[in-house]
Length: 380
Image (tube, rainbow, N blue to C red):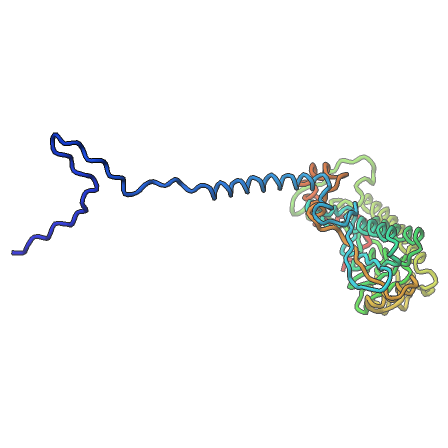
């Protein structure tokens, strides 16, 4: 027979037993532990910090929206147009200002977070204004890397360069990088000297209106029909839904061809006015839209020299009569205020149209060759 297990050891009661009858009760013993108050001090401090941060952020955004971010956030050194200056090379005296012309030349890129990127027309215009007002700038180098773009946008830049030269007398040198074709050459033509890299593609002196015709697809595959309502026989000339065999379509094409030929003639005038006697006598036979190498362009007189940026810098110093100049580059202010694309004069419309502008910029990027838009653009 096994012994029963020992009873478990129970902890003695922490409370005193009741007193015998007729005796006073013993004093109560203190409870062995006490409830502590929750430590909320750290969380209270954290909450206050978050609240203050939110208030400060809203105040900061208010300054951004009224155009104060340029100075408040380390912007463009007080330049109301958001152009900043970056040092590239140091020198003994004076400055050469480098202005980049990159990508497709289209006006109204808008810039900033809510736009379609940096507007090259506005950037060149604002940069030339800064170079004009800076007495230390004695020459300008346009660093071109563009396949061209809109005829009108290219013409705007060309106009600004010509007027800058007339007002200031400061020399303008072009340095062509990968590509300076069509509108890229259009904006280069008025320069005092053009240097191209040995691997540059340039030329493409021509105008194009790209178009499509979906008449067969529309009527045979989609089983649809053109329901355009118009007033004026040629109001829909160039329509992608018109019957290409119709007299109306052929007449519209002829009218568009006249427009393109007129713009091409103006393009060739721009080249002749800019290059003058540097062009060979039969240069116009090469102005048929063809793209060419730097060596080929030099034989025709479209460029002056094959070289690198150092070549363009040396020529700018020679034309300015000042050796060993510093080189600075102009660009857009990338502070928060500039990235939002806001200033005192345009803050309200920008805010009202922010999302719509973002959408329009995206559509414009996808339909950059929308039929009917005259382009000085090399399309390989």
